[in-house]
Amino acid sequence: MRILLISDHADPLAEVGSKEAGGQNIFVYYLASFLGRLGVSVDVFTRWDKKNKKEVVHLNNYLRVIRVKAGPKRYIPRDSFLDVVDEFAENILKRIKQEKNYYDIIHTNYWFSGIIGLKITQIIKRPLVHVYHSIGQVRFDSLSKLKLPKGENEIFKKRLMAEKEIARKADRIIATSPVEKKIIKKLFRINEKKIDVITIGVDTKIFKPIKKGKARKLLGFENKKKIIIYVGRIEWRKGIGTLIYAFREVVKHFPKSKLYIIGGGNSKAAQKLDSAERERLKNIIKELNLGNRVSLLGSKKQKKLYQYYSASDVCVVPSYYEPFGIVPLESMACGTPVVASKTGGLQFSVKDGITGHLAKPRNYKDLAKKIITVLKNGKNFYKINCLKRIDENFLWKKIAEQYKDYFNQFNIQKK
Image (tube, rainbow, N blue to C red; front, top):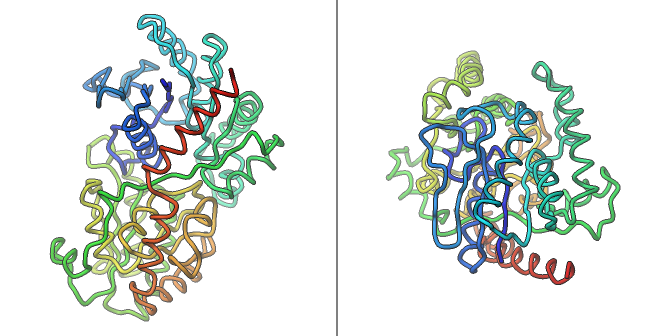
């Protein structure tokens, strides 16, 4: 079996944590890697965004990452991708023709990739399976009370039209949670038989629990303090500002607590993209007189993150909108409870009162209340349930097997 996987802006080999490199990059990397271990050949097509990156990277005998020229070989904002989708599709088709490759299935991720996939299916007539990762209407509704960046309303209109077209024309849709399946069915008015649920996974060889004291010793953290951690992009919709305000309330109950914010890129280009939000957060920290309690640690390597999760008493995911969220899985795999916004796929991944707690989005008082509850209960109150939840639902090996079975079944139906 050979899969043509399109991940327009999310290069699976990109630096995770920078402004536009996050969950989707991780998802594509692990799904393709674990499918390869099952003997499924996968070619991942992503945009060529840096001159010094190789055009083709062979990760093993079954997996290639192929960078496609679409616009200049530099970073472009995601909202500019509509200008390059035609070139992207044309260059994928050129490579297919040159290499005389045959693909069984086209698997697209995010709406730009969906548009590209629809263009390609018109030529090579292969089944198209789409994963939304984020649904425009839901995101718009979640963020509409806030002042959106200039021009974003117009982008949303185009996005909504494109996502409806993808829902109609794709052969099948994969939702990453039962919550998302209900949204897709209702929003796009398609038969639920066209939608299947396969979750996202976590690599438990990397994300594993170690004793809190040992982790703190490795990181140089004080042993007696309560530690709260945020991991993710430095981006306003991630709700970090709300978390800082919530932390001010937490300090009243736990005066010796610390908040560590991990995320953002380490490269100069990535730091430039994050700089405005980073400065805004620094101003909030200063305004609330939390300078000696809140630390922005920058990006950390994936292979080291388990130490930070294990060292923490709670991981907070305060997003205003989150389609799924990989961070809760990473945290729970390390035995650390999660306090997350009650939005999107977070309502599925985090079991309220069992693996952590859900809080009202954009409500720092409720967020603080839930964080305080976890700190009072203690990490061990949630630890076993966190590990059990991951083992039963979110192992990449099992998820890749589900995808392989799904694709095989699909081929049988198409024949």
